[in-house]
Image (cartoon, rainbow, N blue to C red; front, side, top):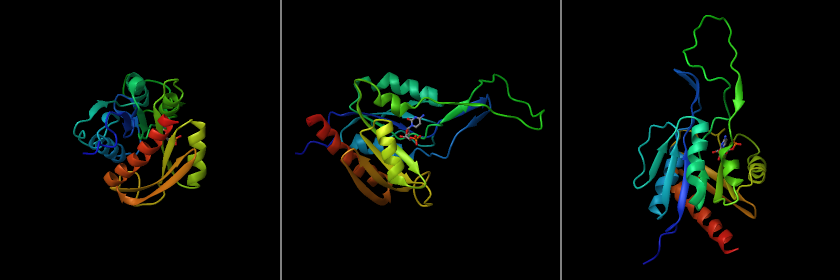
Length: 222
Ligand code: C5P
């Protein structure tokens, strides 16, 4: 009998988009489907991990055996992650967090009585950086959706956000990334890299978790 790869490992994953309220009926968001994050949660559970999924609004059902916490905005996602991260071994930030939110919280629906309107935005907290900045940090994995110079931007993010690993995908290609069933990833860590070629998101999730588990164990043994 072999022990599953992630037996006894607790894993926190963010997935999906966030919604930033403009008024009670409108919001800013993006095209993230949550499929990659949910595939990672499902695969990690199958590999024996204890999985907590902090999820933005998606049309997906909770993977078997995973604990799911639903949030809407980046601030709520930040709060939920910080409340859960303390005893986690691995954190994977797979959510497409909105970089900005409307500066004002408007209580009533905005009326169309002006020909022009300006929306003022403020920066959201960076969940991934804040997890990585904790003294008791877990093994931290980020994602990067890039349209050019993938390795350059991914490695820059890896060091700037002080991550242990980053998985980058080229969202300029039509068949991969946002909302598609398939994806391909280039994975970078401080001392190495690997390519995970185009395949369905579940197989890709299993492969990525294998790479994560290797580096996680190496860092623990170091
Ligand atoms: O800097 P960029 O947004 O491209 O970084 C992407 C990575 O950072 C993803 O792993 C994403 O989940 C995470 N992120 C985050 N909080 C933000 C913005 C991005 O955790 N506010």
